[in-house]
Image (cartoon, rainbow, N blue to C red):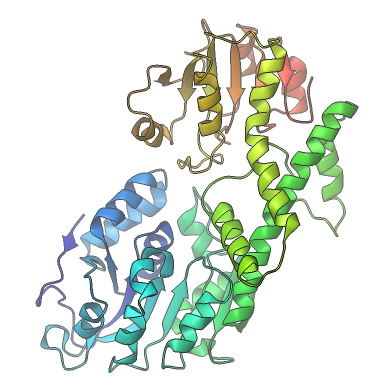
Length: 451
């Protein structure tokens, strides 16, 4: 893909064109660049190119996004530039009198704060923007931070058109489509009722299933509250799954009944090994820091985190109990490694504590994971007890157990093949249906729904 260095003549555009400036290397920033390009906007993305390349590699499973990235890059509709050490080096390139970009105006600036945290801390960006001659260009802020930090940042900017867009809508495996038609679009405004300044984003707001705008501080608080609620629902169901185990009740059936109540709703009610990824753990960490700064105790959030951490080891304890502790030197098959189905990321996934526990007993682990293979090999390059295989059924022969961590919705379990071995199945995500469980020859051990 054609990356450009920030040279005097690097930016060559039509004299009457406008450009959207994106600053950041996260998947949020990359998705934004592609979505804006798809809306016929000229996009210049500034990032540490080594970090940008790393992110693109980590999200290679985002096939649609990657294809559009390549397309718009080849057409020079989306151009990437190395982020300089000084913010002024970016801002000054788009001053009206600058001959390198003469006549080119900035449609908007979009800063992804988690990508530029080192610059943010010393107010480099605030100083650069406050000395900019293009004071009419809106600035959009995105990212996760302690409650109040984004609004404080916005107040330091000496311009009225400052906005905050939290990426509560982005979904791994469907990044482009989830932003193009977002489930919930939240917009924080420094100046009340100023969203008309964001004509470029109007299609996204109109396509959103739900849309709400408020002051930035309120949207920050809403973002944190939404994510904390989702995490709480997951941990609550996981706690109830342990109770269901004792009482011989299928927690999946209970979840379905709960979802029938409109007051509860059906989302995030599936028991399993917990939540992972970056979003929810980062949100809970930021919320804890925010509450600590205000000297507010939040025992519920602490419990949510504790339950989630402990839940990731629960399936191993069931495995240990099944074999009465005689698990040394066994061989097991593991299907899935990512933190959620159809994702290739293993951040905060149960795969890591599970592997560590299995390896402590000298257990050989055969892992099938099509999308997360690269991350696993990079993290455990010389682990003799780890074998990455191309098919879950290839690893069955000689194994004494099978773990299900994350199963793609496009790859349903073939019970007939699994029954050829009669392995006990330890389902850490409760992915098998009741009918599949009934057809299993081997023992089934789930979380709150054992056979």
